[in-house]
Length: 472
Image (tube, rainbow, N blue to C red; front, side):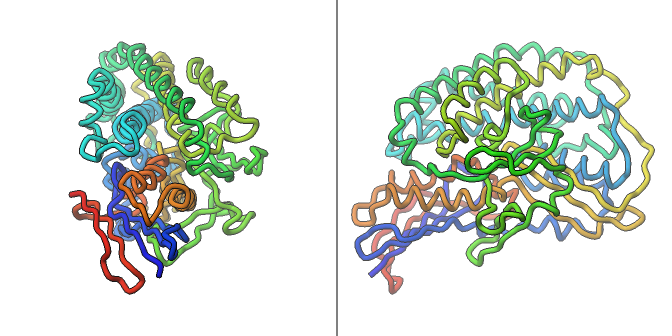
């Protein structure tokens, strides 16, 4: 009789998720599901608030990527207010966004993903974490902390806070950048580039040495979607490009018109919806987002060092790079781009301008903000009455775009590596690692409170407990 394995909670991700793995009588995996059981209420309880409150409310969706929600919200509010921010305000917002990218990408690779790569998927869970990484390579661990701190300091120097800021407002930003803060950001650029390049070499070396695993680990073709500007990688402002499984262009469209192109599918075993490209239908229209996808849709990167790495990336495959473990390499290339782009922004003469706010507003009643969050395309869409009171909100959060891909990756890895008759913790960790490739932020895509232990139960078809693994 078949059995079911439950992984509850998935570790080293942001938020709460569980996995159920259904086995046949021989202990082989028949089907796997990624369940997102958290509930997000931000769309509903934002109703009745004034539109200009949204850039303050929505960063509370998540403490890991509050900047992404803050800026997407501000961009939506620009449209609601019918106002275009001055150029210096756009530069400052983008610089804030680079700080977010640096701190998020650095934290994920060095603190959440690298324990699997550097310590091993089968390592003791007691050491397969950031503490174990510190013991094995304290110098690298310290550099990782400095990298994340650098991103957070960019955010603080601009907005006054590392999380949940109140800085970007409809029509621009509330405070300009001080000279001393600009100089402090610039003073560390070369050092941070060196740290990221070291991480890139570590990641590339691991991928090259483990090609058999990489090719067997959640390696599948898909559509890809990401933001570009004149064909180059773009993270702040530009059209969305979607390509097919062979890398051929499907469409390039204004992300603010997403309702014409994106629909959402619902399954009864998850609160998280499944976005897909409308014209292709469900499930043919599902796509991947975030670093792997962004590099797969781009023709180039506009900064020199990141573009040099990008050319190596492109040489990996004649078409899109498909193995999910390459998300980690792509993430570090974007990390490098973000530091280089931060330098470009800081060296722009307008970055110190005090012309940072356009106050000439005229309520339009609707606005869409689109941005590339670290975890993919993020949409904020607000509708208001004639006074600017919010009547409806729609959020398609970055992680949601990868929902199908995460589920498919879980199933592929479970079928390839899980043996129900000879189950080990390392097998289940590989399933979790498939999810970690996507760096999901599940508190963004939903919202919840509560403790997060890991309990794996093996039960028979009648529900009787056979074995249990527990990690508090």
